[in-house]
Image (tube, rainbow, N blue to C red; front, side):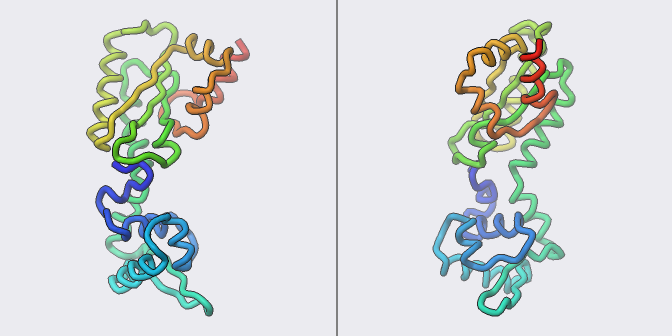
Length: 209
């Protein structure tokens, strides 16, 4: 899956980025605004896509005097599919969170970070997951290791992208916090919370101890 433009998984043409912009927009947008937000194609190409989508009824066009404003017709039968495809990152986070919720050994914290959290990357990019286990869970615990391995396979099954898990204990996290390593910025800015305590709250808790 293209992590920066997940809708291209199903709609690889310029229609994909255009629909993704419209699915995320609350208000009407001009062709130039859509082109800028889509970051692909030309203004003329985007307008051709919009005309074609308007002909199907999936896009509404409103005359705003000097320009035409376009909105996704959310009553259209295809609109829910467009909205789902436009939020595949959210769907991925939801599926991973559900799997984590069923773990026998719960993580203290789990989140997505890196390219997927920044909405960057491409078909080759890793899906990065931060996993923090409680200190009373030994490194190499068979159940924990099986859970983590299954989660990595779930990522591959859901996205086609390789999974990378950065896994450490609470004590090891505390060690990173005392050294102010650069990796902390990668973990926190931005990240998508999946399970357990938010990393910011866990950071405050560990620093206070």
